[in-house]
Image (cartoon, rainbow, N blue to C red; front, side):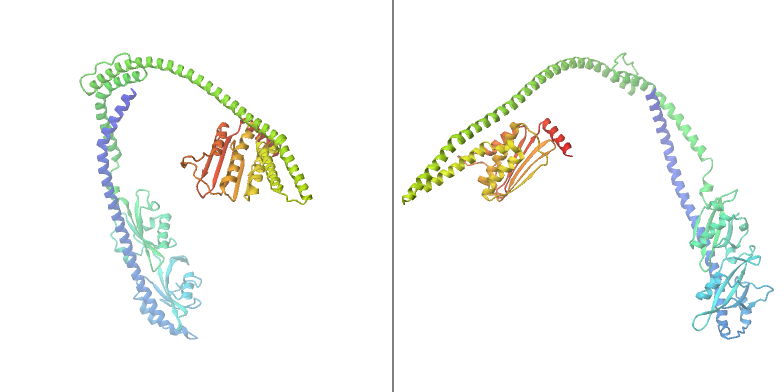
Length: 617
């Protein structure tokens, strides 16, 4: 049933997708086109707001020009000690204003010198008005936002009156009386849709003018338009702050550059945006109906396929679980039926194959058991050989060292004594000849005997250096290298590890002999100036490196016939292999020679080194 449900689900999904994907594609393309139309409509509203702003800006510019002319006329009288101003130009200038309802003249301190028309209460701004002080300080014209004064809200246009040096000595200004019912001519240019409105707002949220419906705008909407005035940028969009309880709106706002104002055009979204009118609210229901229809078609189609497939699935699961009975029934002559026949043939073949595999498994287990016993025997033999090799190593090294001790004793007890007696006899004979005044040819014989005695002493030290027994491997290697290389003028540097492992005597002897052979090769053949010897323990291995700067050689180069083998290097490798380690010789002509010996230390030696390190720590 799990396969049937999965296959039926796929049939449903594929058929539904076959119907819905093209419809969704068409809907997406249509929505994209509608979005483009919305953008065009918003851009058109932006242009309309910008056009009204430009017209309002032009008319305010005319008012500022009139004020500039009046300021020029007033420049002379304000320079006098007692200014007498002619009111005629001011009365004539009033007729040229677009928005100014009255004009006035102020001195440097903000006192009113002239006002036209005369009123019971002056409409001039307070001397402390920041915009007025800015005009008097900078001599730049300015238009203010709405300012609350004397129970009413006013806005002013201000122009500085300057002297011949360009300094502000006063100001000419005009008042914009605030009345919401007053509609500037630029706002009347707009063709607003039903329910739309237009408004002029200053940067502090004061409404300077507007069409019908402006009074119904919320404070949040007014403040959003004020942000456009402060930002000095044209913008348009669906602002939630301006939505009413019954409809969403679209707002386009454009700043008035000569004043801290902004013009906003507010219209219902359904009158502007195509997506709000051309996309019905029943679209989700239509999509749901299409999905249900597609599901019905898919269910009927899947029903004719999933039943036989469920039968084949159950049979396949039994076969996968190792159950080959019962047989698969006949499912007809269509594709599913042929699949059932093929699965039945496979069931029979698998049943026979499993039986054959069981027989082979039994045979394999029997052979594995035999091979395991053979491997155990071979491993036991290898262990016996390793033990025999270790025993042979101890015997060989012990035999060699015993023979060396015997030879050393014989040389010391017999040969050296005879040579010493020979030296003394030659010395007595030489003294007797000197007393008789005869020539003494025995001096050369004496020197030869002394040299032979020294050589025998050296052989005794080489055969069995007592320092190896007294001081250990590290000191023995350094002692031997110093006594062998220093007399030949070869500089020696030894770098010895801080902790010396405790090794069996056979190991110490074998390692010392490898170092002895390497040092002898340097002394005899390398023609070196400096030699570096390093001994230390690293990762459970004893590492020995002997490096010189001599003439070097080619280790793997073929030797001419009759040339002797490098028996010393061969002996180093053989001794390292007997200890289970490796010896590597690196050399090339003109670049010196480097001998590296690495030997894995016995476990008891490693543990003793760790205890020694812990005790010193």
